[in-house]
Amino acid sequence: MSKHLSLLSIILISFSFLNLNAQKTYDFKFQNPELDFNLRVDDLISRLTIQEKTKLMLSDSPPIEQLGIPSYNWWNECLHGVGRAGRATVFPQAIGLAATFDDELAFEVATAISDEARAKHHAALKKGSREQYTGLTFWTPNINIFRDPRWGRGQETYGEDVLLTSKMGTAFVKGLQGNNPKYLKTSACAKHFAVHSGPEETRHEIDVLPNEKNMREIYFPAFKTLVDNGVESVMCAYNRLKGSPCCGSSFLLNNILRNEWGFKGHIVSDCGALDDFWRFHKVTKDPVESAAMAANAGVNLNCGSIYSNLADAVRQGMVSEAQLNNILKPLLLTRFKLGMFDPEEMVPYSTIPVSKVNCKEHIALSHKVAAKIDGFYLQNKKQTIY
Image (cartoon, rainbow, N blue to C red):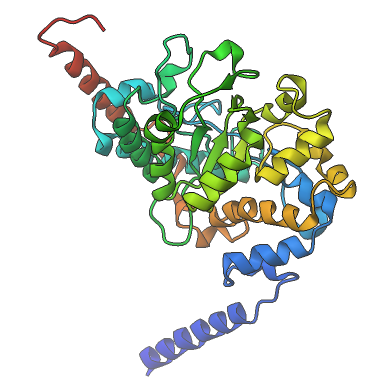
């Protein structure tokens, strides 16, 4: 008899819990984790003022306190390990990883990095920290084609081969973003779009003039491949392309990226790139015009401060509020897909323990990559100098 009573008690308690959960009410629709992300984002946008919308489009995004939206710093890096946020496993540079010609190994590395990223992020939240380099939006990988030895950042890339860059970049993105059907593990970013391969010294002012064949066969394919494979973000570059700054180019960001390739994620400017519009490229007269140019081209996120002038651009009729809503939506969708507005227990990646950070398994993986790189060079029978 007592066993039957115990079973009945468990059933009643379970039903009570489910009933309470079903009856839970929310102040706003966007807070309800049972609703579709698109509906939640639309609801959130409908509650924001123009000024609040523009604040959410800054890389150092302040809180919207009356709606319970926490601050968020979008800038994080993980080209070969979680960067600038304390202890983490350091893997060989991207150019070395590419020398293995092993995209499965690249996937393993990125998976280990995203494990550590999630663990560090949730540990920071528990301490109340939302500082730079604690977030889940990583401006990685760098898939520019390394054709100019004067470029001092070539080690960040996968080299000069288009196919290899596409394969390694795709594997890295998949390892960073995970395979959950609802939530992103982290957000990866294909950078720097487009034709951004040095020299470094003139990157803020140069106008690059590739022909159509070079653009389509060398500089664009890796980006298209990553878009086809679901990369969440694309970073536009500092330079001009055929007269237009990349971050103000409707040809690049609307015609190619959005319309031709069907990119659905968010576009982030390289840091300070929108300042270059009026300071160096001289295509706008001031920060307000620069903000309008970028917004109308489709830049969702400004790494920098130019978008603090975006509300003025709307008031002056340079940008419509409808366009503001259009470019804010993909940005907020990324935050929702990362689980930032849902209870942690609903997000599967939130349980990755801090013990994963710089763990023995990840250190061993780093050594495995390094050994494979060494093996590649040591077996060079012609003794060619690299």
